[in-house]
Image (cartoon, rainbow, N blue to C red):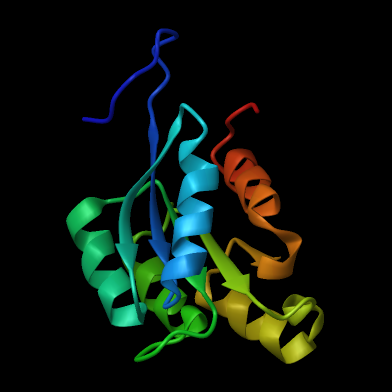
Length: 137
């Protein structure tokens, strides 16, 4: 059972999948600076993310678009079937990946809930996570 705060609001568990240890570290620090967010696990590729999602049962999944073994869209497609109610956020270095009609269509079909450019920074990732998990900042 997840920890609770004084207001009895449940801490939300996030799975973070990115092949860059540096990116994972920055995002983890930003998220865990918030009292109601905890990174319950980190994955280095798509296959690892799927395994850890089964093991950890996160409340939200952050997936890098460009990962080894399975990219973020392929991973999201598998995860969406197994975790239909868990928000999946795609992280990418491309500024406007979802403005590309083909990329947007593939991501939407795969079940991606939202997409964020890493160039927007950790604060943008945090804002998106809080919005999807309905946590006030």
